[in-house]
Image (cartoon, rainbow, N blue to C red):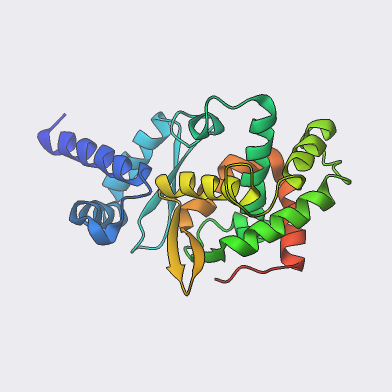
Length: 242
């Protein structure tokens, strides 16, 4: 193997490392810019990068040129965020609740299967926390009485929505829906999937294109019908702004 080939493998692995961290942006990293440019213009380098990704059980999703790449795990590979990363000490009921909150957030941001499935769409979506909390509170009360989605055991699904429905939407302390949803959003922001903004006293959260990619692979593999149910309700009430 020549030194040039060795360098290509090193740089391909370097590009994957940058792409695995959604907080890395092309705008802030000259290294990322150069490697991404090579990925798009050098077929041999592109193939090397894709082969390394396949060997690591990773799939490369190409976003807009100024955003970069998104990388997700294949077949439960080792790199994508999971609920264990989110909060490893959760009890069974808490896992269900936070899993449902993540599903509800996904459906609220992308209220149709087409919207969440368009992985090459690099648009961002902005949502207001207060509107999200109000919608989630109302929707959980509706859903607990019709929880017959095949993707999740009916009893667990209904119990999860019941737990969310009894939470006060707003207030101080940790036992509110606002606190729980802000926790989820902060976790996603820590992974580079969301950004937080304050505008005119409103708490806004911006879903980056990377969230669409991760949500598709993390949530819809086993909860497709649940997302569809929730998305229909999000589409029929408050519509997030793009």
